[in-house]
Length: 197
Image (cartoon, rainbow, N blue to C red; front, side):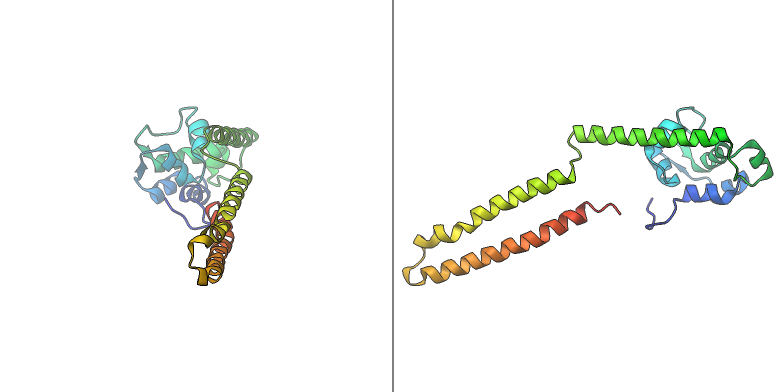
């Protein structure tokens, strides 16, 4: 499910707009179901680990593997996020101290799970630190520069005597231009590849 930058996920928006009105939430969402917890997380704009660890842990979230009814989950979330008094009044805004603690605990659990996931991905070498990438890339470019700048000197004996120095200078100029282009483009490409905004 794609969303524009800065746009709230649909599920989170419905929970805010419905103000405890479960029937309105059902009508807005309709009979739509998704197959995975990842899709549930995307719909609500939360991490998949939140759905798995906080929402599913108690077993109260409606649905089952392969069939997650979004309308029922929105209604369940409305009931979970609001106090009984606020739900009955229909304003859905006030959260009890216990609910706020549960939310804080869920956010902490989510942050801890994300931290562990990053650590695991680093250990499996699925992620690397940007500084390490920059260092390795700088070393590779420096090595390539050193090797490539030696080419004109090594080609000198192979070039015709009358044009030897002229051709060597042209080759050196083209290599230098190519290296300058790489020096300009590689950091930009790396920045673009790691842009998470």
